[in-house]
Each structure stands twice: as C-alpha cells, then as structure tokens.
Image 1 (cartoon, rainbow, N blue to C red):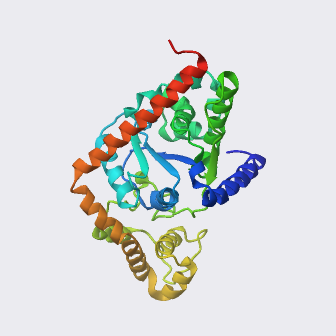
Image 2: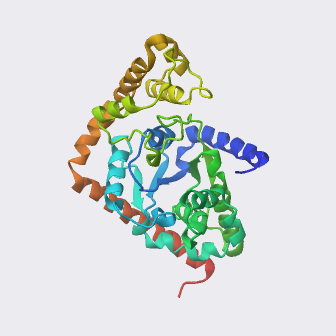
Image 3: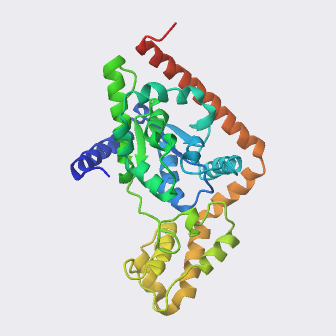
Length: 349
C-alpha cells in the first residue's frame, strides 16, 4: 500500500486525467485485464467492466489482456483455462466491449510482448519486486513458495502496459504499487537508452465495493458471487440460499449485520437506489422479502446482458475469431514496440 503522501499525489493526478479525458480522449491509451481463473461476476462488472465500456465509448484507445500466463503464478494447473478464456470474451462482449474499438488479446499469444521482460528485469531489483504488496498477498493466499513467476509479476504487468504504450490504467488504491513499478521501469529505460515509453497514470476508480452475498469480499472461491453467466433462475436460487440473521426487521448496518447489508448493497447498486431506503421499505418483511427485492434488482439489471450472452455463446466461431484477431493485432503492436526497444539499445544487427 502506498503511503498517504504518494496516495494523495496519485489521487490528484488521477483527477486531472479524468477531467482531461473528456476533452482530449485521443491522447490516451488504456490497458487493463483479468486472469482467466473462472467466471466473471457482479463484482467485476461494477468494479471494472462498466468503466471499460465507458472509456471505450469516449474514443480512448482501449486494450484488454486476458492474462493466461498469470494463472500459474499461484496455481498448479491450467485445467479449464481455454473454456475460461472463451467465456471471459463472451462476458466482455455481452457487457458492451466492442472488439472493433477494443483490442482483446491473450498473454501467451504475444511472444513479442513477453520478450520485453528481459530488458525490463535489468531495471528493477529483487528487493523492489519482493516489496510489492500483491506479490506478498498472492503468496500468502496460495500458500505456495515464492516462484520466479510470482516474484516477477510486477514486471509482467509493466510489459502489459508498456508494450502498447499504455498511459492510463484503471486501478484501485491497492494496485497503485504496480503503477509505481511500471513508471520506475519506464523512466529507467528512457534515461538509460532513450525515450520510448510514456508516463503511466493510475485512474483511481470511485466505484463502491460490491460485497459477496455473505458480506465478505465477492470471490468465486468463497461461493458468494453471482456470475454474469448465471441464468435468472440460478441467480434466484443462489440468493435464496444466502444467510441473513434472526432479526426480522431489515436495517442497513454493515458493521453489525454484514449479511443483510451485503444483500441490500447488491440490490442498491443494481437498481441505482440507496440501500437504506430499500431497508426502510422492506422493514418487517424479513429475509424473505429482502431476498425477493435483491433477486428482482439483479435479474432486472442483467436481463439484457444475459440475452446478449445467450446469443453470443451459440456462435463460438465468432468468439474464437475475436480472440484470434485481437492476438494478431497485439502482435503487430508488440513487434513495433520491440523494434523500438532494440533500436534504442543498439541491438539491431
């Protein structure tokens, strides 16, 4: 976690860029992405996908990496990875990502991008990588030994951002250290060999955190997440199983009633309403009425997305074409950047 001073500076810079995006969208290239470890859920939708579509539709050059190599930073298998990748693209398109405007590509299909790892690794120390909060958190969560891949995770992310000359990355506060590491690499390269890479700004998101159905962080591993691929019936069934508490009167109190408040938050975000107002309306209706309100809010919000998803899933050849075209486009971009890197380093023979 960055200290308070660096966070305040990052926040000011983020606000400046947010304002400039509205005036000069053509100046910006955005990179963001996901690890294909399972299905995308409502947390992903409200936390990142909505913002990606907004930036895309503003005319900003947008790029999304499906970071398949990063799956093995903390896992011993790539089982189901192909299915996860295909379904991730289906989710993207059903939520409004347009492959004609946004380059969607897989990490493993762009060797020219990954080749940037070699010069980049010479620009960052082992201690700097080990201090990265994500590296520490992922290692602790997985219980694995610190592998070389996990240790170099911040450098992989720098390759993702810089190969396409990305200069904005939507992030939460906890991801700012990745932006700092990327900028350190870019500055060192530019100073040592010549200007190739831009300064990167982390666009701090103000989206409220959507908790899981049990009040904890929404996560596939906790079984508390509503996936975008779920049907209305599956969603209703999952919400019906959610725990509440023994008190009949419904109130919004995240500290003392986390499960009830998590359900109210979900209904509020999906319906665009204040969860406290929803609680007041439900009142003595109890857990049954609460779950009905949540189910209607979620299913109403995602009805059109699910309808588009059902159509897209029937045409997997199209989905594969989207990935193939995005990979080809990414390779062209990466080849150009790699050529500039070699030229700057005097490695053209």
